[in-house]
Length: 131
Ligand code: HEM
Image (cartoon, rainbow, N blue to C red):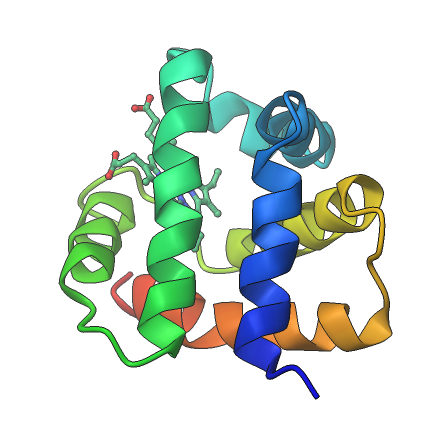
């Protein structure tokens, strides 16, 4: 039986191999509200897609027990003195990500979905909690 951690790593590998995964994620995320769209009006999106690829990896590694140094920096950049990302937007972010994973991972199922939710929650809570 594969561990939840294996399921998440393998699922992420399948999604990162797909050219449009990160652009689809941002299209989905920005499609969810004007508030989200407004946050990225001046953003270099190709660079942002690349940064997010690493950011998601940091969330996964944190759930596996690696120190949260990089996530603490993200907590700082996203907090009320930084980009001022209001906490409710992290739910929107998570739903956009899970929808994009479901769309791109050809073997996605409910067990993988649950494994993803468990893997992402601690890191999201850390960043959101720094608000
Ligand atoms: C836990 C989920 C999230 C992760 C892992 C994440 C990751 C990142 C990373 C790696 C960067 C670039 C490094 C930095 O500027 O500090 C970044 C920038 C940014 N993020 Fe997030 N982010 C998350 C949630 C959100 C949410 C919910 C929003 C709301 C709209 C958001 C808006 C932004 C903005 C506006 C920037 C700066 C873009 C620019 O440079 O113009 N992020 N994020």
